[in-house]
Length: 140
Ligand SMILES: N[C@@H](CCC(=O)N[C@@H](CS)C(=O)NCC(=O)O)C(=O)O
Image (cartoon, rainbow, N blue to C red; front, side, top):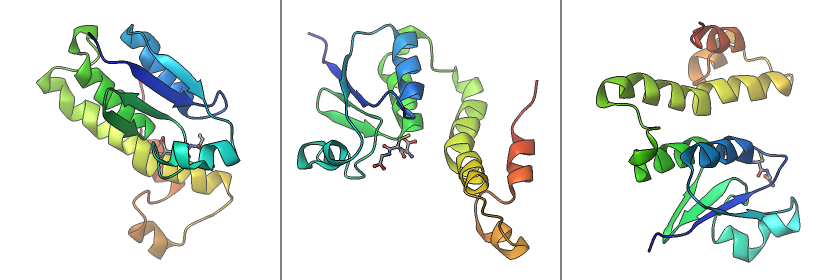
């Protein structure tokens, strides 16, 4: 019997990324909506994600947090869905998956918080400047 996928999310969250992935995957899953505030910081939910954040999934005994990691895990756990690139395409796949979850998100978050890094900080912070991070994203 196939192991259950439990999807912990909130509709107003990055859980939307994982929700999209789960729909593309075509596998059954059970969604548990976690409200912001105390429910997300309850001991029950902290046992799933010690950060007290969504999204997270539990697949059998495996718990995965971090939207990008969850998508990568699901693509590998269900290869028949055809969402995992071939080994040749995996360089780009990992590159942009990690770039989006790391430098790009950091650059956008700092910008939305009106934080501008000094030239020295741009050398130290993995995102560099907002402009460089955004310009690095591949365009069609
Ligand atoms: N790096 C995490 C970020 C998760 C995150 O910050 N989730 C927000 C919603 S989008 C959250 O749960 N915030 C509630 C809180 O921190 O109490 C990911 O990519 O999944």
